Length: 360
Image (cartoon, rainbow, N blue to C red):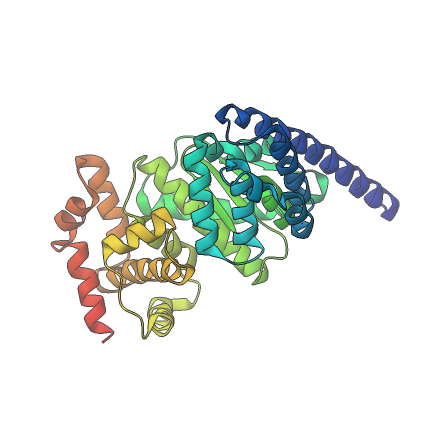
């Protein structure tokens, strides 16, 4: 491809994105008009909220604040205004607690808002370019993202073969994967700081790929982490304790990353990161990860302690404890805790207590 052709392809891709975003802005306005059924806002207030949403679509929080100015003074129970204001507080002003309180109030006033950004995200995704591979269905924006999608497939295929071999079973169907850049991630899901996620409701893996802090190594890590979530859910399509779900995904994302002593090294790193803080119980870890209502520091510790728990058990009992417990659970049913105890002759609570003592 010549330079001129490349520039032309890039302009075409950018034009396609602008058309897609324009369509999503229209969807945004439709959603706000639809939510008027809850009758929490006047027509004038909804108009101003929709204009604030347009500002956020252009990443202009100052503009959004101006559009919302006075709305809540006149209509303090306008759910849509509370919802958008809460988003600004969280992602632009870093006022997490105030943002959560404001959005919770908005959702109580108008429960329909729970699906607002999700519907918008799915709409944007429905317009993406698709490519089928042996084990994955990949979606991305267009030609300029194709190479990133190919890199993702390489890492995902490696992980597909590795986990299939370890567990002795492979996913029964192709796994859908959506490739995003940072801006696209924010436009679709209103999650500007996230590296990716797996949604068990639609079975899709979503991965951010552009200029990720940590470069290609972090991209590989994220792809492996999110694929592990998808693999585990196809293997066992039921809820697992949060410490298991997140700890196992992080375990396989890092597996063999640092040679033969990677587990010891990673445990030492986590020990330093959580030093001086009170240990969380398994119930507290579950609450922090599942509901995300704690401070960011508590949530981070919940993820770190989950990872430490899985690594510690692997270090003491062998890496095979994960497929052994999962295969027992698939065959016999019951709870994860019961399967863990049947295979390892101990309980998760006892193991995390041993880890606590080892680090004292």
